[in-house]
Length: 306
Image (cartoon, rainbow, N blue to C red; front, top):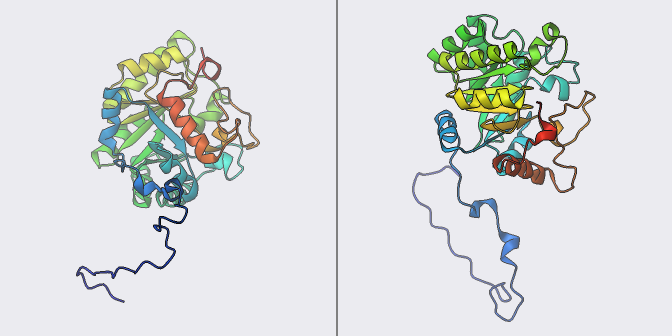
């Protein structure tokens, strides 16, 4: 039947004998019929809301996702941001690093995740060398946004500052990523904590201020000593999201598989906590992570670096 654009009156169905509202019959438990529709609607996240959250002191909760079903579960659990990370190379594809991940891979998984979200802000990684030139960065970022992302994430500073400026000037929001940058694993000689000595910490701080000045709206700090991350968070005008960067960042992110304690065949970093270890459902684990981040209980000293 083709819609007419006019209001349609649906006739009321007469209640039959023995209907649930008969006072002589047992009444149904209202909780059984409670749905998410009864909950007050949450306002979908936008890029400007990230700065508002930092100003208000509200912790941001971020997780990685690679498909619609997990994304929907995160959305229902109140996760603020969802990242389609190039970590999919290691936890989904079984690769030894993130380097083999392509723009096609990110765009495909971004489209999948976007279908499961209605509230969380979706961020997509620019994979290895997708941001090597301004033109390549623009092409890759456009594909991510057309697939459903609201922001792209790129690693590093230096020449990447020109990329950040170029994208922002073309209405593409950017999340920067400093500290341990997995796409630099060959140069770094492995996955190691960054910024431990005074000179490295100062350089990291300078880079953080530089990516913010270039126009980045968000900054991920990975595997950075807690004090260094706290100093950057206090002086950087944009929100920081920590992963192995201590409790004083403006928010936290974990890889989905790490949060659920799934063995991906890779070494388990110190900053990882299994939120499913105490039992419950996947949804319970997502909510437990969100609560722990917002209440300042995660990460603790055992999941941070000095």
